[in-house]
Image (cartoon, rainbow, N blue to C red):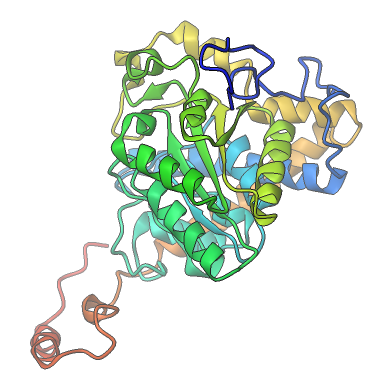
Length: 375
């Protein structure tokens, strides 16, 4: 935090300078290398490749009319995968659009994850949520809202509850760069810093708030520097560098667990694909910009690092992709064969004990013949 009113921002400041570990040749900068164990890095790589394949498959299904909507994470895989590896069992995650895969890293079943895209009987949410709004109580992940930013104060509220209960748990809250211009973001930042909530708040700055570039929606020099006004520790990190993300998130979570308060993280990344399957990015951004960022692809960068260490090669990658594609293919086939949620489930989960008028409505519904199948 700046102590003098007119102090000059310096590139060495953590919320202005960019923390990175991986160099262009795949080596790790020894000054910043967190020395992540090889088994964790290999696990991260597997999860990142699986997410890349899964996203491609879900987009294909949407284009074929087999699911209604999907928001891919292509180009931003390092942030959610690193988060999943850093979180502990009883931590809670409040995602935005591109962090659903955190729950897969934490052990949420792939079939149930895909069932939430279809919204069928395999969906633990009983088909009530929109696609790409996955959640799972078993892994403490809350569904995000399509309204921009409200999950950030929810994450802070959960963190404040953890503090009151004296739990050693952390709440992870996510938003995009556009959400930092929303009132909910500023409310969350104020409360988190003032009450030293055990929260890690992460902004994935992918440069585009759908079709609005970051430069047109904020005058701040960086997103991370916004944390200064609230007295919150803020860090700007290379969001396409898995090792850098792992280091920054680990440090932030450790601080929170020690009672030292929240950390705000700006992960500088880029959305390679469309905002969602409802979007056409060619209408508002140049292909040259996309091609430049493809050279910083987080999956490729980690692959280069692992190759340099002798941990992967062409044969390893070919086998891995074959295994992951088969796993996803089997899961999709099983999920797509599932029927719709049971009609009577419409009345579940509203009251602890169903009141009489809803019992009557349920009985009336069940007395009617089911809708004809279109399968």
